[in-house]
Image (cartoon, rainbow, N blue to C red; front, side):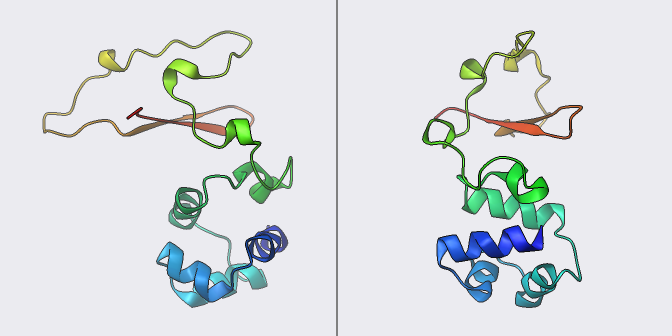
Length: 124
């Protein structure tokens, strides 16, 4: 994965320092990941896909697919426009119990058995 992260930095024409500053992580963390001493944690990956939504996380983690999502996949799909699967999944966000505070659901992540995932964000 460290080689693919380096390829991504080169494609984006950004330095390790710029990436660390953008993701608000320690500069040494990026250096250690690129050197293969450490593996990125959840917070690092979450920040990476939030700041670079076109980056294909499956490519970064496993090398499968292309570095970037296709233009048609650039924005995260809403629940209503989720791509059809073998069996369609219907989610009714109103049936999810609301927290007792004034919090609103901002995103839902669905994890599949093949270790991929899909993120759904609230439409604005």
